[in-house]
Image 1 (tube, helix red, strand yellow):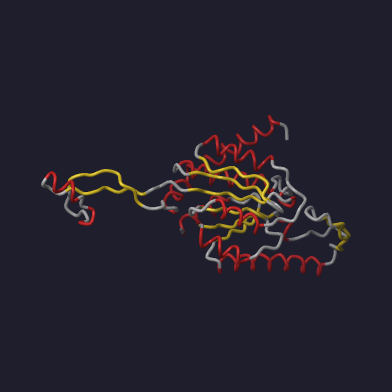
Image 2 (cartoon, helix red, strand yellow; image 1 turned 135 degrees about the vertical axis):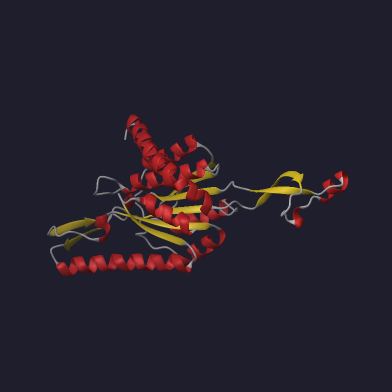
Length: 287
């Protein structure tokens, strides 16, 4: 895409996602993700019903009347968005590529975080980590994240989720909100999910095109793996072959759901073009 096309696309995504975010997601986001603790705000005179443990004894002794410390929640959190940029994510058959759908969801999450004064960072990975944008606040930063997801060079390589998670945990020690976008077409170590979910609040988001799950009858076809370069002929006219393929994909999703569940992490299976705002709203509500 040319620069003018990128700017136009980013603007379109901002307009669409800000409407959805402001209408439904921002409040749920704030309620779902509490801060990291409490911080001192001010001292005021004691009122009936105040907790005794909040009494400021130095102030009370000085003025000979009870005063209490007012504490506020530390709202600032860090959101990390991890995006698989292996070649299979640069694909789509319903008018929207997987990466465009990811950019839109990431924008909605980012604007929700920005509206609560939280920081947002980005990690782009495939067989290794290719780009890291450190967490920052603000609208311009979110727009930069959207642009980077849209314009990344999607790599013809097998994605390595384990390396991306390991890198993220090595750099970001403080508990963060982690959103992992991938089509999960490649192997990963479920132990890494368990380790990550103990340290961070993790949501895995499988982004798929409808043709990832079911291949139509188009006769003999040469199927090409965009990540490994392998090619194989298949008789898609065979109902048995199509059934076997579809069942294998269903089994893969069931295994993903089980791995995330046993890791105490969350998981979503999202088709390009689906209304992600409802799914995120329900996720925030459960949290």
